[in-house]
Image (cartoon, rainbow, N blue to C red; front, side, top):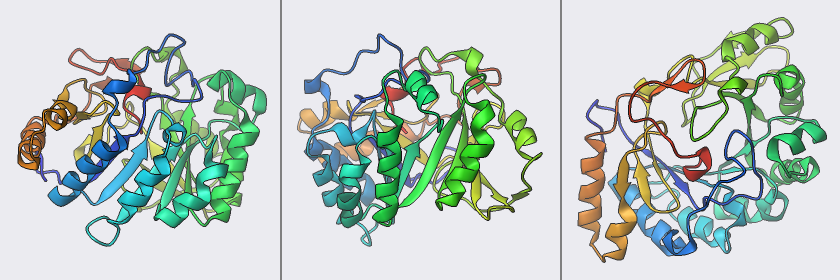
Length: 326
């Protein structure tokens, strides 16, 4: 699959649910309303769409949320998708807040999951509870240790928040690399009602880190938009995702499927195509494939995020981050 700009689309991120057992302030507000259960794709519908995308050329799948591990029987989804590994699928990964990872880590590894991305914005229990509104940091850390014990590769995602966790980044980097985990720093994105006053430019953080660590540019990439630095003192990798101060759209290879079955061509745009309607109208695979290919022709060149934590004029995303996932 290719879009109108010649970018190869080989990566699908799928939200298994828009629900979550945390309420992170940059992801959702206190009044977030979730999609009604009848509107959520069944696990069988998710599997059918993933299989169709893989037949069309998708080689990498990431299951996201909300928090995917709170969905009933979700391990069966990973087990069924894992059967595609080596048959067109090269990577099956998961984004999680790790609150239930201690329970699921072994099963995920057996299912063929290659990597887990864990949200971890702080190592301070009080700050963690404030950010998540109700989270228990000890459960998350136990989940990370269980994933390590199961042999899963781990990437820790840290959302930068001015005045909240900016003083912790150096210690979080050291903690991550001591455990063999990549650390990825992410600028807050202006989606839904995200607070623009929390925006912290990545360049500011790097300038501070460079006073403690020697950071070396690399050409290493993973499937996502992060670029990587090598931290010479630790030997570990530091990933950087700066959607506002340094756009990454020119190499975008991703599309996203929400838990309600809407295909979004861009994280920062609201438009998309309703694949659930086609599924439940008993349309055949060809009709769904045609809808996907038609959608790719209007995938935008880039998002509408601008520096400062705001949206430019245009059809930017008004949905909360939790509604899309990953």
